[in-house]
Length: 89
Image (cartoon, rainbow, N blue to C red; front, side, top):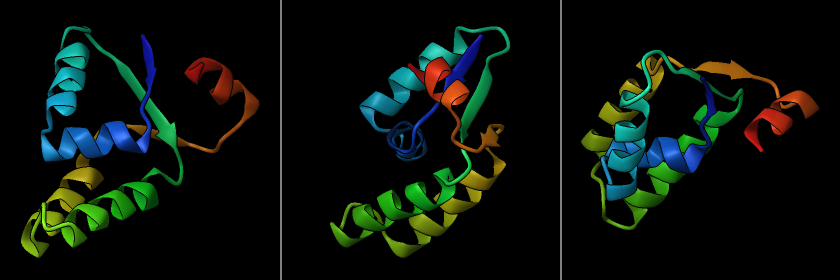
């Protein structure tokens, strides 16, 4: 099955929020999920983590570690196209 993840889902996964744990459980139930996301996801996740840092929810060391984890997530990054939007919908 193909799943398209947006930045908010990835931020939730990284910070292990309640929503992130739900996403993790959902994906874990799938034998071999194919994860896709938009090519600019990393910049959006960076922005989300920076927002959490400014709000005092994460410290600088945590953000650094989460950015490293982001780079290791097995997700195909693709340009936004009509086909991708159709699959996402």
